[in-house]
Image 1 (cartoon, one colour):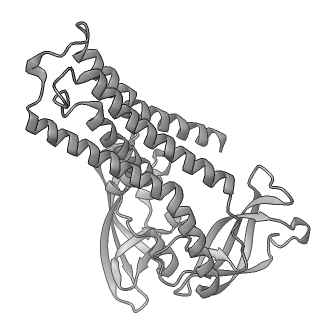
Image 2 (tube, one colour; image 1 turned 180 degrees about the vertical axis):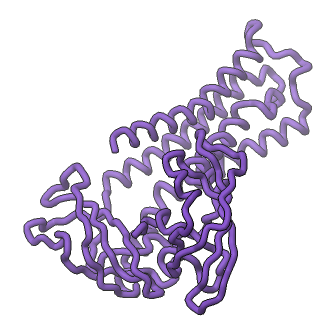
Image 3 (cartoon, rainbow, N blue to C red; image 1 turned 120 degrees about the vertical axis):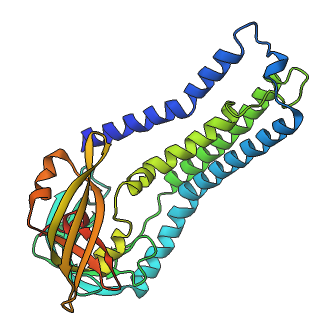
Length: 331
């Protein structure tokens, strides 16, 4: 776990370097090497300068709005959704099949990763692991074999989708204040960058120093790309599993016959993308053929030689499928 977290932090910092400092190094190094004066031929026309300024402002406003939503609005919305889920969610009896310590202890209790087995909205047994802060570990409520009650969101459109019945949400006020201050700092840095750029670069020509490759334009675009990348955007382009929540919580499980598994020639982190051709029978006995693409680890290539593969499918959309193992339900 430490290795994975360290690796994630490294790649985030690596991406941020190429999104912010690197464009600045290139821009200022190329354009201001001869005494800090821009040549007149490198200045944009007034109309293009206005266009670049408008695009730059729109990108930064979009970035700030997305950050505000992610850091401040979504956590509050998740609290409201949890309260609604605990009131109106579909109740399922769940069995604890595994319980592991999640590391750092919380005040007055233990932090646990608890794996439950219960029926989804279609009555199909599935497994789900939830992070639990148990304030009364002496009661053994999450010991293996114990029963609990789970609530599932009927619409499967909000987050969280599933929660332990009777759970309580405790907002971290310190974290909220830190997120708000962090957002204010980001907004102040952006405003300061505009002021610095104008004072340092205008040289009596207004905003004509702006260009498509100026950091005021490139940096917000790159930062938006980093947000998209680390929110799963890249993976969504190379996998055929676009609706895993509905597949897991309302789909049906069956054994699919593997007709063909062929590499597409695309690699992500040196892992090949494979196109799977599958055939299966639904709960009514109808036969369906479907295909999707998936990035396969080199250590998991045996799946391409299997005769049958457990899958989940949607009754109303039989072409929408996913491997059971990818939904955390390999058994």
